[in-house]
Every structure is written in structure tokens, then in C-alpha cells.
Length: 226
Image (cartoon, rainbow, N blue to C red; front, top):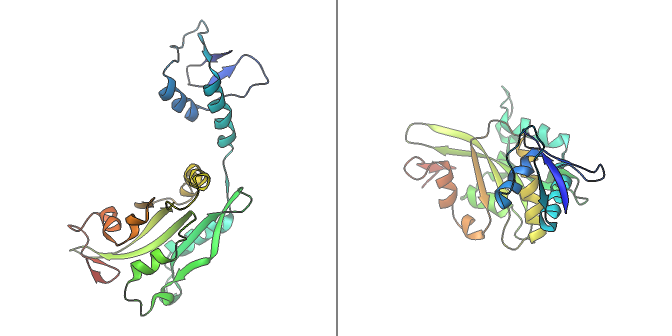
């Protein structure tokens, strides 16, 4: 058993220098799981950690190092959200996918999985085309420039998509879930997020429409009555 000091700010400081310190955010998870932290005061309360919690402790430190977000991800976000005066609308981005690199160290643009407005000309079901761009056995993040109408006016909103279908591996689902915070931190100002964990969530547009406010709010999606 190893004894740890419990500070007022919620950080556990180890007695021995060779053991790492638990970051405040992960301490919250630890506290919720165990609820064994003593109340801090000036006289150095301590408590003991069992092996399972120490395992969580060391894992948390590893996760806290985070994952890098490539500069191209931020540049692409700027491209899809900014409308330049005089720019060709057909060249505007409609969908961009992002993936974790093969070495697991960086979130990058999935260059082969981008759609521009011109790529959707003549499509009868734009939403279905968007869904079909997603892999069925792998995870992705995405930005979708969604055109929809309420009873009052037409709207365009960027939607963040967390795509983790049931046929992707548990390891990949966990990796994408734990790394989502890093890419979302680069995408400021987004109002909507659509998370797909099961293909039934994407079989039609009903779940997606609910994310926009439901059928009482959304009258058209990509030009189609809902």
C-alpha cells in the first residue's frame, strides 16, 4: 500500500518521488469510483490506495499527455466555417472527416473522405450520401455543414460527428472517445453534435433531426421535407 497526501486543490501528491501525481480531472473520476478521500486540512491527512486504483492512477497519467491535433485540422475547420465574399459556392466544403493517425499520435484530416457542394449536385438524398461516406468498421470524427430550414428561416450549421459504429473494435472506440476532447477544443462555437454508436442511429435522418431540435423545429433537411 502507498500513502498519498490529499491537497486542498484536489491533487494527490505522492510520498515517494518515483510515483506520478494524479491530475485533478482524473482525481474526480477516482473519487466518484471509490469515495474514500479524507477531508483535507493543515495536518496532512493520508489514505491508502489499493492496486486497482493505482492502475487507474498510472493510466490516467498516461492519458493526460493527450494526442496532438495536426495544423491542417484547424485550417480545414476555418475553411468549412468561413464564407468568403465572392468565393465559388460549389467549392465550399460540405463534409470533412478526421481520423487518428496510424501511429496513434495525431488527429489528421482524412483526405479521401471530403465532400464539396459540387460533389452533391443531383443527389436526391444528401443526408444518405453523408452517412455513406462514413466507414462501417472504423471510427471517425467529422464536420458536416448542414443546410436545414425551420418554420422561420433557412439555416446552415456545422455539426460535429462522433462516429463509432458497433463493428469497430473496442480499442478504437476507446481511443476515439478519450481523444475527442482534443479535437473539439479546436472547434469553437459548434452548437450541435451527433454521436453514432449503432448503425440504427443512422438508418434514416430521424435521430439526426432530433439533434437539431426535432420535427417541431426542423421543416426541411438538405432541401427535403421531413
